Image 1 (cartoon, rainbow over the protein chains, first blue to last red):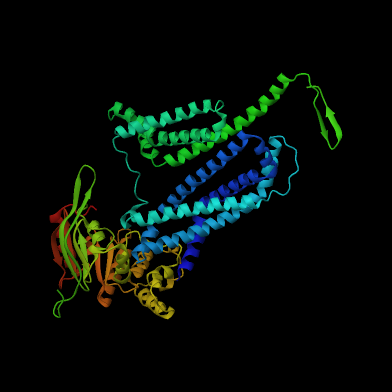
Image 2: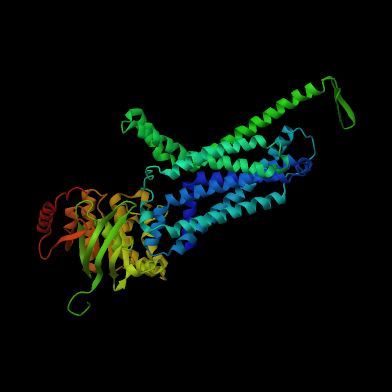
Length: 341
Length: 259
């Protein structure tokens, strides 16, 4: 049996086994494609040129989307590899070199990745029209736009995700070359490492986490006054709050729980031994996913509330500022309606 | 070391030490083990839990590296080898059987068995013949096109034994091969291994905590606290007599029934 046959078989099997990963990749790609379609749409570009804030926001959102995709897919890849570690060990035991095994895995990964890219682009194209209409409707622009197909967006998406596949391939090579056979055979059985007694470093990191979040929020209050360096400030706020959140999940919470546990002197009682101990045990391993979830939901909530408050306050502002103006709306040279606001 | 009158040594271990060290303390698992396995031997490694059986097997079988000491397989010093060379040694000289089978779910029984020789330049008819030989010996030829999820534990372990033997390795390492099997499937497998050992002159090194499994061996090495405590040769004894000897030795060592 040749390497191609082995790869095709395990890809087929893996789509079944890891369809969650596969579909998450697809949705990741299609969202990025929709985003870049929006970014390259002529009407949007025109508006973005008109406003500095708008284009800065778009750039930051694009970077954030890339960052989230990178974190997400490297996390997914490490789970993917960990689940198959026994298989990787077996290949090496029957005499395949590490280079061969990593070639097999990368080959497989590229096939999965390209499949996800193609499907993601198709799904993205189907939905981008809907999203564009939705977006235009939300910001209240009536305009004509052609087909939302933009080759620039396709190229941008492809470049980003091919870069992503490259990063995860390097990750696969590192995992295969670094782990010993013994680790590979016990990877699935290995429990999360019980965190040792926190030392000074973890106390410092724990406080840094809180400090970073406070700093991030503090900077965000200064943003309006320093509008000229908006992009930099936005990135600073995002990176410090995201990194702070990660530290909080990774160190701060377990450090605080450790302090609590020490105060109890081994007498935890039923509820605490069921909750505190297992929380401490699990938190470190899940810090990545918890951070991702927190950042994503915080962003979603912020965006929703931001757009609603804008929507809400604009109408009020108009009412307050110009209570006695007769606006009219002309559409196709015909007077449609006018009213007293 | 090799001459006409004595059988060839396929595996020589000299002063094997293994230390697991963490920040605070170092734990010695193996304290200088010397072992010599000659061609065609069926050797069992026994000992109470924590005596270093599996660690010894792993260091002998190139799965783990010894902290100190030398291991020779067919006169190649594997303890001094780089990964790339080690994989060649594994491909040509070694076979492995594990407690949890380690079969690939994506491949059928036949494909699993043929996997090790699909890497070597071999014609289809040669592969067919090699498969036929080993599969009839292990009574799994009719399962050829089934997937591992469709067969029983005993059949899985026989498949994995066939995979370990298909490329005619000089040594097969087995780590608790009967650990997950019921007694009937276990004695079935051991009968097969014994027969193959006799017919093909394959050297087998088996770790087991089960005295019954070890009674199939031609020699049993007992480990205690990382030392070779003693050895028993089967000689011309019947299997039952040898089984009783092993039980007696375990009683001396203590704690042998518990893994």
